[in-house]
Length: 132
Image 1 (cartoon, rainbow, N blue to C red):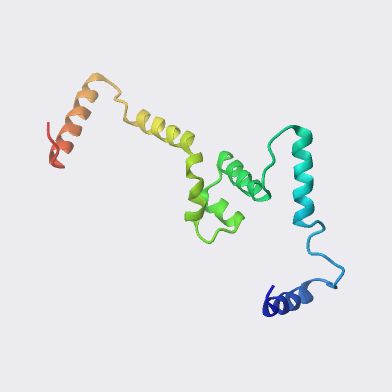
Image 2 (image 1 turned 180 degrees about the vertical axis):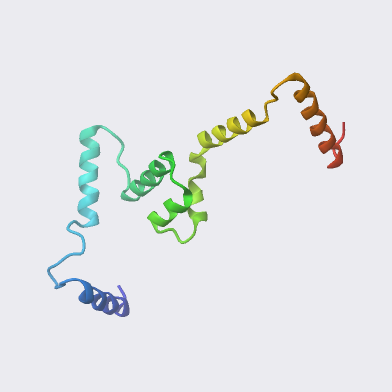
């Protein structure tokens, strides 16, 4: 760790916490956490994952629970919401739901309306430079 960063962190912690050489910010080291996770995975008979994978699982769960990308980005500390959109591949069920709802709105109420809507779509297509 660079000396300047160490000095800044020491100053910061001194303003907020009682801090001496024997205290840790986190009660467990990343190496100990990795070892505990490895042991737990072996006991459970599942593949060992990296600690960082827990962050991805957390983001995936929040997406599945329906939280917005903006809220998730804020929670995870992403610099921009574009980083959160890396999880967009987890959203196909929402895409299907949107498509279903839009289809329901577009369904004609009767045969006359169906013919009228079809004519409008053809006129719109032609005016946009489309063929027949």
